[in-house]
Image 1 (cartoon, rainbow, N blue to C red):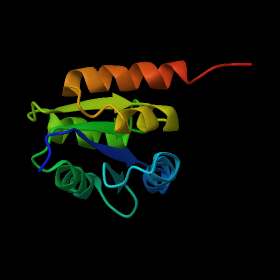
Image 2: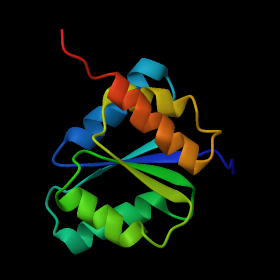
Image 3: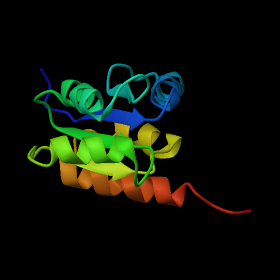
Image 4: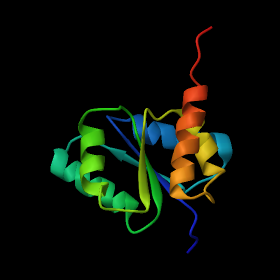
Amino acid sequence: MTDDLHGVVVAHGAIAPALVESVEEITGVRGVLVPVSNSGCDRGRLEERILAAVGDRRAVVFVDMPSGSCLFAAARRLASHPGVKLVTGVNLAMLVDFVFHRDLTVELAAERAADTGSRAISQR
């Protein structure tokens, strides 16, 4: 098993699977990102889904919003996991960049993802 980082995308409804599918189509890199949806579950079940997706691997958990059920579930259950960092405001640009930079530390990968995602937002 490789020690490269894995990504978990946690979002409302069908957003997570759509983002993961899009990244896989764009990059050709498969099996790196795991989608987790809050659909059809309460917070306890969502926490279980997130924990199962992370497992015992080093991971960056990408959450759709900087507040709400997805963030609260991830933050609560992953606070004691030293090999996991959370990044909110997930977007396609940060995920595409992430799959090509999984050799970084968790901290650097999360920082890079947030920076890449921020730079991808503009007004024209």
